[in-house]
Length: 192
Image (cartoon, rainbow, N blue to C red; front, side):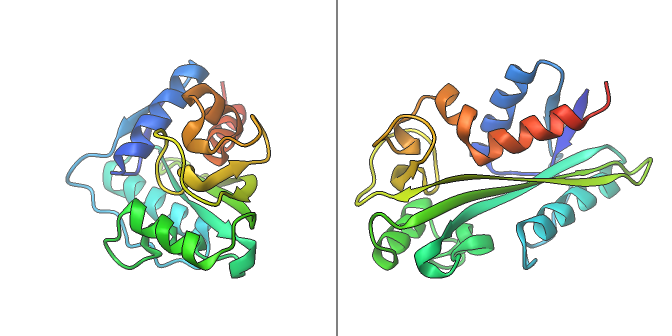
């Protein structure tokens, strides 16, 4: 089965492609350049994901999936949440967003990565959202060369102790990540 992936984020495209290879039954096609996605102004990850999947499905006539994901810090009342990609301001880099989180939340703070993965079929009108989490704590300083976003300071509860998401192999990360869990839930739900 081929699904249109409504994102232009290069990191997410690689991660979804890797997850699909492991699934063997699903492939994610990139979003055509001429398709515009709506801004992420929703109050929840699910609202943002559904908006992008609906726009991609309407523009192409194809079954589309989209995710919205981010990090929630308990010490900050759940921030940055849906503002994770723009936490340090519009156009902020991953490094700037991570630096702001490290300034504002104390090391050891409880964290949760959240991924809402929306499925929209324009032919049947079917819509479904799969929301998954990966919990952990905030490291004192960034470590590791892998991953992206907040991975260098995210110490997952599952997996190897005292290693950040950016220190895990792709296979280790995919097994426990919020996005890996959401993709597996989607694939398990899809009709044969």
